[in-house]
Length: 534
Image 1 (cartoon, rainbow, N blue to C red):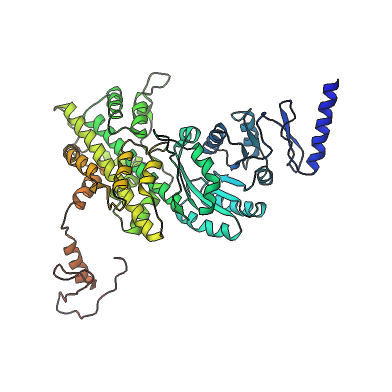
Image 2 (cartoon, one colour):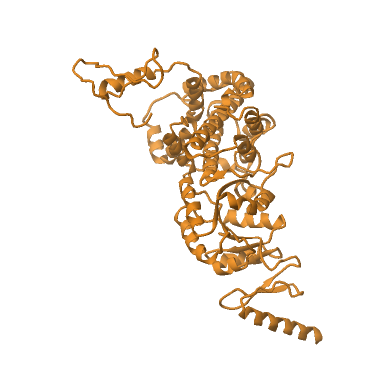
């Protein structure tokens, strides 16, 4: 009876404190009250380690949000959560979050009140207007120095404008790329933060605490730069991801349609590749996908429709490359390959009308060809990263970012979708030469491509002669050959432009920056056109 009375007294005390909008977190009996609710006090399970205020709050309990919360909690951080559909909060708190240091809230007001200062609110919501809407809702609830974090796949121009606006309200803002998918979010993602530099010291312990680590313990997360730098780097990451995926898919089609390999044989090949310099997350999961069977014993892959989806980040990367004048050809082709895959009905109809070679039965040395294919994939992957890094270098110059290119390679070394063993070599390249113009010029990669390029040429020759499409591999080789060519036919291009539009040209026998015009027809004058884009 004494125990019951003590419990009643504690409950009465809690209700009285609720009137003052306080939080009572541990009654000693495994229960507590969320007393920030504007409706009624909420009975919640608590742990003995639960604090009065959480380290961080997260909005958006979809796949990535849920797993990030569990990751943060497992690393010793207490997290408050909110979702627009509040039933998700209750389901999460009573399900995957049960018995953990996680506080469920049913309004943004509750969420903010439950956080220690400076408050850190992590948004995991749909990119675009939804982020701006939540920013507007949070601003009046937060205090000077509090931090809003956007962890979604926001387009970097949106992130570029948001810090200044949020800072004008006395707050701080971070836009961070988060890569690794569901598993990465739970066990350790790659994180690429940028925005308000003053916010970084407050979120650094959390971000570097939950992110992936490489072999020496270095975190796959560091400050990228101001305004939109973090989301720009994440955008380029996703563009490279598009290219990597398409290159692997082209290998798969060549194996299947030209070499006539079974799923099990392809599984074994990718398993072998993953033990060498192609060791990477995407090769690893391709190995596993090829072996997966359904309950009837059929390979799941064989029943998946060949139409690819996309969320836009690859497209943004290609558009940005066009804006910067950077030849991002491989990644661009990977985006167009997805677009072509979506035209399923047209392709089926065209297959019965358009003529072309059919893959012939392979009769050569399959082991030798597979070695060429391995080298082709490696060479093309290197070109994809080279193009991505060239884009980042151009953007850094355009927007005044001081990007740490070796550090970015380290951030991508673990946790993210494009994690690959040779990212360590990219870091080494920039450590040796921070001003490296193109990773193809690093001695390690120069040597590797010298060894691998013939394999790429052999594979493409066979693919072309047998009608097997390999647009990204082709783009890789064309970029490589174009980049190493000291004289391209752009002299003729400039002559044509000057002929029809008086766009002028530079001369080989004069200093750069002097422009000339020829009256090609004898009927034109001396007036020349302006140059809009160099």
